[in-house]
Image 1: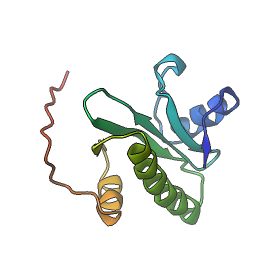
Image 2: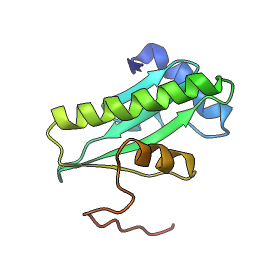
Image 3: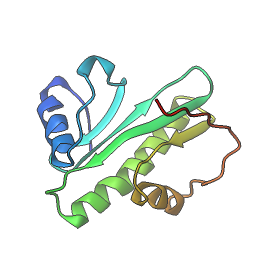
Image 4: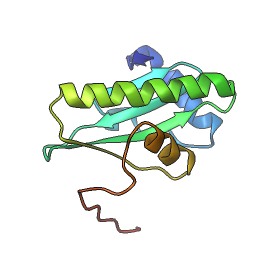
Length: 122
């Protein structure tokens, strides 16, 4: 897993396209982006509230199941480690598919939370 550099923007675009997703505009990317070219990507958004957010997780549809599994396992370990180093008290994640929450719970995340999330569909 590597930190995102401008050289990896095409890889980021390719991973998202393989799942029919649109890549976020480069100027909207967070400071911390994890990428394994041809396998997967995840993004750590930082806030000033003591909570950071794992979002934008996608795996390449053409990658092997073993490669996707290894990437996601490494991603959860690395994100948790980095969030601690950055001084965050909580790490949150959003997902539109069941696989990611199951992976998070397997890594010790809590499906319930001590924080409250508010959402509004637009």
